[in-house]
Image 1 (tube, rainbow, N blue to C red):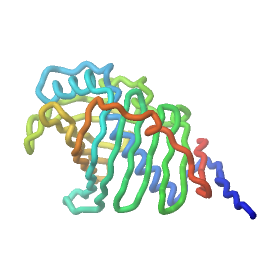
Image 2: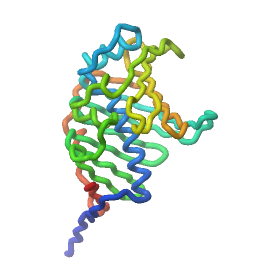
Image 3: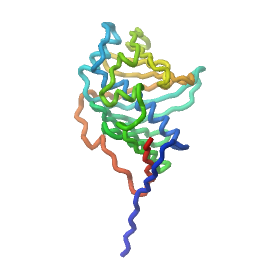
Image 4: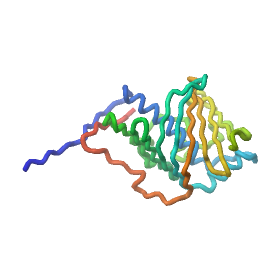
Length: 235
């Protein structure tokens, strides 16, 4: 009886290409989001309602899991994209984002490397995050080396829609985002809004939140399925 063995095809590249570019754009937005959620313990924040919630979050929360609904709207609030899924994050620097709809995508980071898997395209991008050229952006904080106050101006943004808000303004204008808003309810992170330099706003609402739960270590590991192309980002 013959046995067919299927191996992964590894491709090394120093530039992104479509559809890789779209996946990397998604990756950057997700990575920025996870960065804003975690690893900001070095920051010193003023005493105000939203900022107090942020202080408590980064002081006490070591892991965070939730379902999310994400929308992208333009300057006229026209809906451009809607997606949903679930994610888990654990300090320091570990995360797993699973987009279930409209197309399945998986982004996994173990603190040293990142895997971006587009299930429909049967394609994976593998990036050594520690070697990435991403500097002075929210992604830098995933390494645990970033100081929030060094890269963002922090403002208490008052209350809106029953949430206490914090506004974060990137000091680096090349970060891709104009400003970011984080919303808390009863001290629990519930909402993120990120406005980019193209006038588009990404909104993320979190439900079924679990804080400081035990997350299995294998959640943050990934092995490419057989037969899937693996693109190694080397520059």
